Length: 331
Length: 243
Image (cartoon, rainbow over all chains, first blue to last red; front, side, top):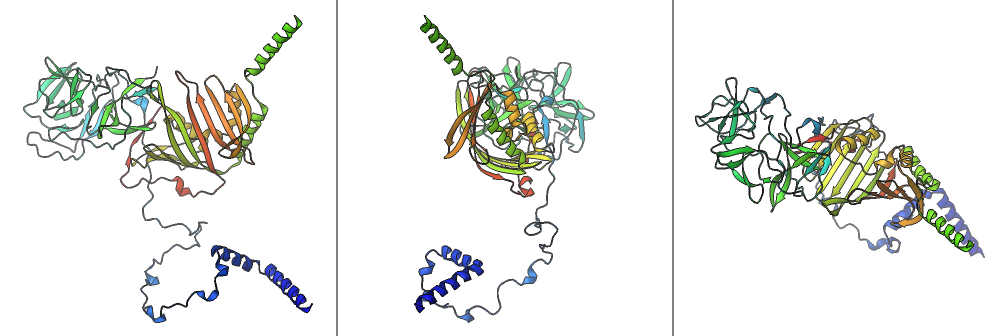
């Protein structure tokens, strides 16, 4: 009887203890849960530490506290965050908006949209040694390097297999699936120059080509117009015919029976009189693009736009290429 | 004779009742849509994941399915970030209240555009100027249920069912050009669990389906997740505006 009273008293005190120290009770329960069957393990089963106390060197390798920056942010900062805000190593940048409107560009298979006077600085380009021309990279060129009568592309000989992707009132069509690869401008050698490039003098091999009351100077795949005391590289005028094109020009398949020649962002078609400059053939593919293009995000895809022509990055037989896109106004 | 007349009238009555009524708008469906819309109107922030499947024209008579997944965090009144993963792409759109940044992890290119100063206008602007549809943005509009009622000819509560093990209300809406089905959770929150839009375009209809999951409400998201810093080597490209 006495024994049962003592047991009852013990149980009562136990419950009282749990009520008074609930945190301890919780901690024990949590710890037991974390240890799984920890309660069954004898307390003496873990051996005493065998590592001698003297094994730790007296001079600790731990860096001295003075090596830490003394200006470390403390949590007393006015910012109510975990650590008062971090000290950034990389500076915060200001991002500049870069948007252009599709309506500002000449797209579609039409003409007559003068871009206006472009103030182009050729920049500092390493073009190699060339004794024949005197190149002044530092001056601003005030000339219309774009050809106003050029068309952005000519339509393909066959229909597209799928409906166009409509964007901003225009339908973008390509034969091949989109496959992005970075746009890396290509240089066709020391005698080739991008649009807007200024040279003080031309080589003696340059010839004069006149078309639509405009006189051009042509030399080794590059068209120039006279500007002040020199010459500026301009977009090749479509319809112009030259006798010789650079041997580096590559054949571009336009249709099973027609090939064009591509050099320096200009497309030529062989005619009786030589090689005539023609619009970029939509649907055809080229492997390189010149300087002067810009990558533009059109919906989910990124095109390279050079002049008024859109090029879709594609992959053909594992090689990165560009397909000339057709961009027609939506009916 | 009387039997014949009765039979004819019965057939006519059944025919009329079986055909969806023009401009039929079910009050139960509207109530459920209103409950969902009200919830979003009360939130300070929301986060969720989506799984999207959509029909894409591969050829003139050949649609293929494209799948994407996204992780979205939206904080009122003017911040969001969405990371989208899909076939050959891993993109991020972030909006910090003044600019929207697009970044392609796959291609290490980005573009920036100055944006309106609030979420709703920014969603509209992204769609109208750049053709970007922010998944689920529709349900976040304060006038969502009102616009559904005004734009749809037919709104019907189609009953309760189960989607991914969750009890949901099934609502169907349609007009001449589109049908919309919504599955809204039958719980305290009335959240969209799935939406399926069928565009009745020519020559073929095509679908856009979104599954929602992992909803978060009124979490405090750190501002830094909405900021964009171009990674080293990233190239800024031009964003072509449709206007």
